[in-house]
Amino acid sequence: SARRSFNRDSLQRGRAWLWMQLPGLGEIRWCAFTPGESACAECLETRLMGNRRNAAEYQAVLAANEGRLPAAAMPAVLSMAAGLAVLECARLLSEGPAASIGRVTSLDLRRFVLESERLLPVPGCEACAC
Image (cartoon, rainbow, N blue to C red; front, side):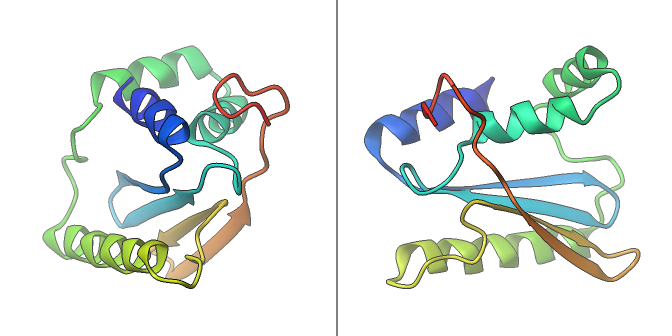
């Protein structure tokens, strides 16, 4: 996948990067990855697949929709996601660390809930060798 290739390139070059997902109407998820300081995107993918009942079906849906926005994505949600991405990238580029490094943060606009949980590295990850 494009995300996997980008993750490996970023790890090799030692570059931090921000992953953001709009999984459905009114929800935004993101995580900043910093090589050597946090788990990587492949660790995240492994953890997400482990939480799915039918991982193969979910993987097929992800592959079919890679790079596409959900049909129900509202302009206001897209604007908010873009603003959050700019803010997190600015934090990554500044001297202070981004709050989302090594944390998966989710903003659910339907329930007005912001949640954040630590992304633990997957032992033996082929990409980041955690």
